Length: 627
Image 1 (cartoon, rainbow, N blue to C red):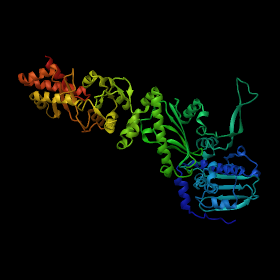
Image 2 (spheres, rainbow, N blue to C red; image 1 turned 45 degrees about the horizontal axis):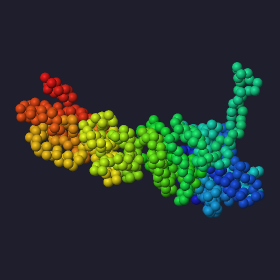
Image 3 (cartoon, rainbow, N blue to C red; image 1 turned 135 degrees about the vertical axis):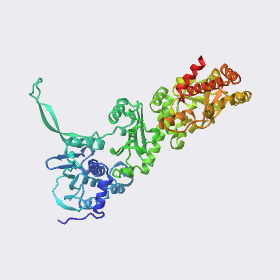
Image 4 (cartoon, one colour; image 1 turned 180 degrees about the vertical axis):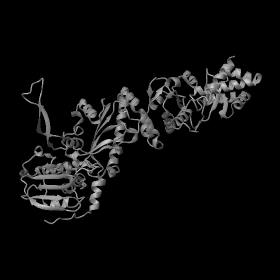
């Protein structure tokens, strides 16, 4: 019996496949079971046109056996089997796929067969855990069985052998343990059960295994029960994935249970999105919008991604490329027969088909959120509370590339509605002569509501959006306008052209006072002028165009030693008694006028939520002026 060398590849290629293409050794069982499933599928397909097969789908099965003492794992199927030529062509040539050839031969009808392995290297993943593999197989329609044996890249042998039934047995001799690798874990029954449920739970044929169980002895008394161990053949996989069923045939509580069990969440999902697509890429997806924010969602530890399956076989636990960053909160599964099961994870991330699926899912998620906003406003507001911040991040990321997709999903608190509203809803309520979408920023809703700059607009019944998150200002600057209405900050930008003109005239009329205050404050302020936005308050600070105070606070929070600062423009209300006192002091008591200027500047800083440069000096100044 001469040993044959692999026809196409060298030891280096085999080493590459079993050490590089697969990043986890546990994947071997998924590959071997998938091959067994393919073999069953092929004979099942043949049975449709060949009555002599004498079997139907319910007769096919995959069996798993463990022999700990001899360190053997056996995976058996009663599928189509292989003859000598098949062994030469499929196992003698690394990276040759019998399943792929079968789909080519079947042609258009292959869509009903759903064979999984199409890349041709899955079988060799077994060498990650086995130092010797024996394949005993008998092809349907043949009287001769064959045994294929190999210890790796050194080659293989094929000999005739005895096998009573059609099908294939893959017998893997598990490697001895080393300091770095504990291969014996794969000889534990519980570990194999775990891997079947993780990777092969939705294989369409039953995967059976004899498992050990315990039970109370029949004659054992209840007060002192005795237990015995027994073995029982058990089907390890559930076989029918919930996403393959029609949504109309699945109860909401079934979706909820699947979600909680699958993603280890204690709350039900807020929204279930079932997708079935055929065309350039065929796939089914079952997506969930969580009902609560995961505890680690806004941390580096949180991993986005959907579980990716090929015909019910898990390829990746979290395929990040299937979700855009702005929808990273979505959980779920995607199952496509068009994906090659055995392709490497690294290559899979750049697969063209994945990009098509990802683009379609993005549109579907967006449409479901729009539908929720329209049909279930209370539900959408709950969603917004959980994940609205993520959508805002999506607007500003990648230089605003996604703003058009996301901006109509955004919500901000309204001064008139007393709840979050969309930009479109704000525009629908605008006064006829109103040119801008007005907003004001601050730390809390209460603080924003009390800002001096809000008074005039409130008196006129004009709605103001309240920004209380550090990302809000960046959103406004990214979006800039909606429906030709510019977003304008009432804290930093002019509100009304007519009012601004009156303020300029007031600045000219009291020029000497403003010049005095500017000189007294020096570099602390860029400009001192009359205000067009104050009613009952004497002073406020604005930042003008560009960087706002809220942006300055953000940069300070992420980098405390940041030198990035907004301009400080001090605005004074010329109609306020305090300004009149200041103006009188400029002429009568310049020293006191300087103290008034310092006091007003400190008050303006406090109103803007900016830190006092000298808190102790401020309190001393107040006490001195009270004497």
